[in-house]
Image 1 (tube, rainbow, N blue to C red):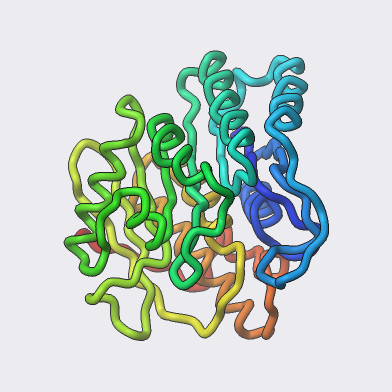
Image 2 (cartoon, one colour):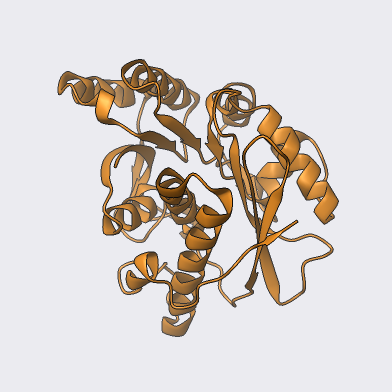
Length: 288
């Protein structure tokens, strides 16, 4: 399995590619990583150093990979934090180039826009590019609760709200693809106070699968990047939304539990790497 992953990078900690690449490699995937930014650490610390790369820089790296004659062996493109509108353009161009060489290749769009409490935190133009262009090319999408509501323009307060929003999001995705959606960090009025929901849907019908996980006392960055990568991996392996949801959700919950136990502010991806292939607490989803 070969995955072209275009996301942010941090030297210290785990977000973006620094969160997505290792789990994929640990499961046996080859990852061709292109970084949209290179920072010393994630911006949640309030201070960081580094730079945002240009769309031209991203395109040049794709050119270099293409020159190796390997784009036809790429099974999927995964995108996350873009950093700049021109980077989004370069990502969509990369998707088109990969599909030209391998029409079966998938595009997994993690629509990094914002989250509850912070609102939109990306640069102007990026939310519109994701909503109006990237989703139309996407086969998989992995929004969080805030991003689901933002992208569909629909409130997500109840489980029926969530299901309607997922159906709207899927209708905006590439019609020839599986239109698989994973919603992370979902909290509706039906979610118990001691739980967090994940919701997945794919296929021709609108059947959803709900994975309710125990709430952990942790607030770390990068979990969404890791679960998006894992959902893509397990989708490529199984082609089933429920299986991809269960395996990705169980693995990330195990990593977060280990992170809580160590008291770390950063995801313990390396220390808890056994969770990727053999989750300590396998969880099962329910139809919804």
